[in-house]
Each structure stands twice: as structure tokens, then as C-alpha cells.
Image 1 (cartoon, rainbow, N blue to C red):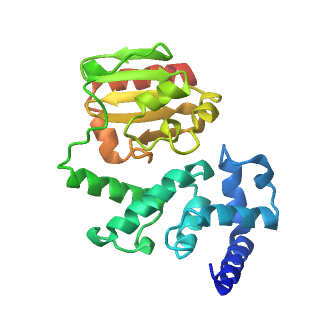
Image 2 (cartoon, rainbow, N blue to C red):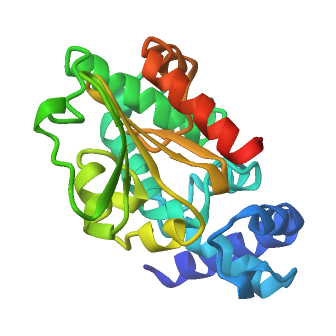
Length: 246
């Protein structure tokens, strides 16, 4: 990095922290896995958060306003940064093939991730080989089987190894093998309900109000319609409603 770029970097982070510090701070309060020391309304802490987010930007800071806006609106958490970096790299490599070729054309990182998910699904002919044949999936000793049918299953991993096994070919942070795995953080708060429906996988964590598809984004209307085709899914969700809200 050239010296002038260093000062530009420092100035940009400080400017954003100064102008959007309160919005960043509010987002930190809702970020279950943000370090407690960063949750204080302090200018230096806000600058530190901005720099953490800028580190994943392959466009060398040009995407920072977009990323800070998304974080401020609760569209990702700090623990998502490794997967967000991969998403931005994916966009950089494939932007010329997408209808929207500029980050500013997307409302937030979730819309961006959804667009890339749709692009890769179309590119693969619509076949998402995200799970093995249902009959071949092992019911491990370090996991709890909740329900299993011909093409629908729910299992709860009880160890990081099980979470990695059942999260194979997903972008779930609890299935990471090359970045910091977040299984322990989530599992300490509540069960990770891993749902297999046909060839697709979904992850539900009630305690943090997260229901994610295999791309680690919130369920889309298309995902909900897909799951609704399985009567076992409706029965499972009703059982959770009784368990958590009765």
C-alpha cells in the first residue's frame, strides 16, 4: 500500500465511523457474536469495526459504504465476514455475467447473495447437489435424529464435526473448515436444526432468529414455497411452535 493510500484508508474509516457511528453501534447491540468491548459507543471502537468490514472488500474500500449500510441495517453480522468475503470475490469474478453489474444496484448484501445463488443455480442447470442421497446420509453418534422420511429429514448436530458433516457444500459458518467455525457459539445458545428436503438443506436456529438456506442467507419466498411442499416440514415447524411458544 502506498503512503497516500494509507492516509486515504485511515481517513475513510474515520469519516464513516464519525458519520455513521451511532448506526453501527445500534447494529452491534443486535449482533449476538460481536465482541463485548466493541459494543461501547466509542469512536475508536467504531473505527475498528469499519476497518474489520473493509478488510473483506476486494474492491479496496470502494464497497465500504455499501457494506456499512448493509451492516447497519442488520443484513449481516461480524461473524459473517469470512463468508461475505467469499461472496464479494464471487461477485467480482462473475459481475460481468449478472444483470446488475455494480454493487450499488443491490439493496444490500442479502440481495447480492441471492443474485449469485440464482446465477449459480441457473449455471448448473438448476440442480443443486447440496446433499447426498437421503438414504446415504449417516445418522452419526454425535447427532440427534429428529425425524426422517423418504425425502425429508431433520437432524441436530451435537459436535462441530457433526455440524461440518451435515453442512457439507453449504456456506454455513457452523460448517467452516478453513475459517473459524462458529458451531460452539451457536450451540451454546440453542440447537441447530438441520433440515434436509429433497436435494436442499436449510439451517434453523431459534435463539438468534436465523433460518438460512444453503447459501447462508435468509429464506426467500422461493425457499418457503419449496419447503411447503413437504408435509413433514409443516409438522416439524408446528412442533417447534409448541415447544418454544406454547
